[in-house]
Image 1 (cartoon, rainbow, N blue to C red):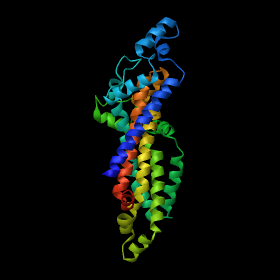
Image 2: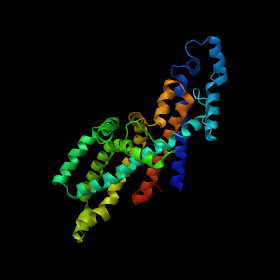
Image 3: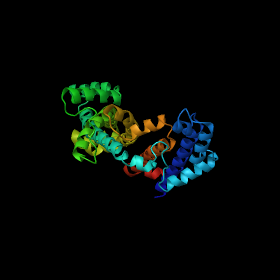
Image 4: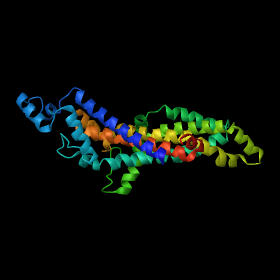
Length: 315
């Protein structure tokens, strides 16, 4: 409990620092939201009046403190362009990106762990070499390019879905989940290939340890040693990688959403950046940073639960 308390405190301090840096960056970068809202024909007087109305003329630390305490209350501010609160804008977008990211993780876990186990068990075999060659190819393919290939093959050639024909989860949940299969697959492919390679290498490394040889000498089968002894230790680096992969998936989904025409967080983020709609951009960035920090914290806690040596060292 002491370790978890320290971890939570560290996470909160990290999130505070991230929020400060985000607010600072959008204060010093070129561009005036008032000018972006009024257009190029705006008069200096009109710009000054709008800046006063938007609170942009107040001191930096006053604006940051007001934004921070509002955010802690659940108020992310009001969009400059859409005349809505940031919370209202993101309420419909978060489930879309979250569903696609979670489905990508499901693809990764369901495909990479069985393949990694099989490749490690049949090290040096023909299928192991084929899996290794396929991994090398898939790891080199960016998610957005995989999305283009999936659209060409499954959307245009086989007509399994309509490219750009997004189905809202509010209207048809089944249709929404079916459409999410293809963008989530494009995100998962390179990460799944990396996971297979990592798990295979970890398992092969564990097979060379003394405890593995002892397990074999006691008459355990190859399958029994692999599942009962090696897999648990090989999962430690895999958990770290999966945690990092989830944060990469959240970021990578921004580009993939554009490929498949999905109105998720990525679309509104890119639109808000071009329109200097900083409350929306800051809300999205701080939200993504919160997910990253939370996932990393959970990975550290899982390490504590899976490896007794870490628990002893943390006392």
